Length: 252
Image (cartoon, rainbow, N blue to C red; front, side, top):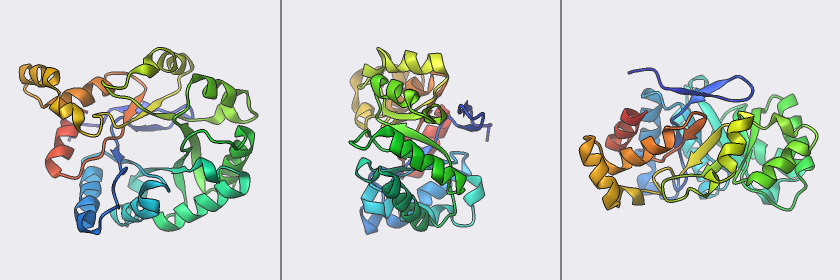
């Protein structure tokens, strides 16, 4: 397998440009074995960044991820998220410790605030800093922040330690190109794109079908390639079938 292209975080650490998402995983026990097997195969193929969250299946996705990374923790760059309702100093620490238990690990590589809530950013950042000092997380970031939110975050003490902003980005959702993408590029702030194929709907787009036919590819591969074309963007599609994992890898 060719080396996976990497994206550099502000800390200098490099992560795979193509990872694995777990949104909507862990919700149905009948799919459990297939989902665990898919994550394991993804790791085998080099998609070693795995993104999950306490919200996904109310912790079920984290528990499923635990099975997939068992015995292989050091191979994986693990991302999880705290809900804004838990974003107080004490709440963040409780949530992180609960996620660590579900994930069966002593650390999360990148811990994100899932979206902006009512808790002051300074309080959440303070909790992230405490978790880093205790070795429970290695880096922190945010998700679903717009440009104004990011500006405010950077004005908070310690806010400049943010490592990424995870956002919805695909061919059907391009609003961030007006301001957030150039703002992030100027500051060397990587973006992490979730739903890069718009939960599969772009695979049925007739315009993409025509492009894919010219390139001996599938429409979803074209959609994913479009997201990955940019330096500084990490894509985290969800895939359960082996064929889809291998299609995604071919794009990367």
